[in-house]
Image 1 (tube, rainbow, N blue to C red):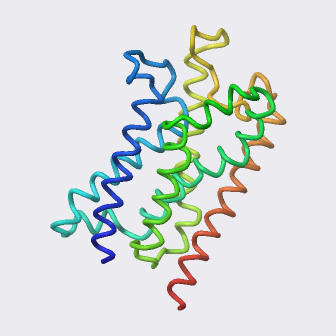
Image 2 (cartoon, rainbow, N blue to C red; image 1 turned 180 degrees about the vertical axis):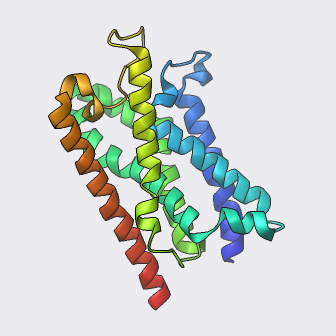
Length: 217
């Protein structure tokens, strides 16, 4: 039963992730939104979609490659990666967007692609982890998974340096205001990044604690 759920959920998650990104990029309208893949949301959905597609393809045969894909530390890290997409968006960005955009944002929030990439894909991935994943997560994974947000930070800051001080047409230099060095200044920027890392560590411990409870009971 669990194996069947993994097959169904991996295909569903991959399909939703790819459709959501396709629409987020504006491709369904025959256009392309510049900077689509500067956002953590779209990158994390892309990685999740590819990862779930690989699980779907390999889970029928099993073998060493499937075992590597579903190794407890890797699966734990990638589940955290996409779960953060939901948490940051829903609890941090949505209140700010509501305040600044009002009814315009209410319409954007209800769009299929927005609900898909920020809610459906992260929550289905978390459910899949709870039902299917090996819970023998090594303790070091709590800190090792931080490589994902740190790599994204390096990518975002490097991209900002390449774009330069002048904004390009239709492209934001920084994808999120909390990492906007021009707007925040070095002191606030450092505080924001340290707070984010602290949150990621806490979140890592939460999911590790859940894995421990599964092992214990």
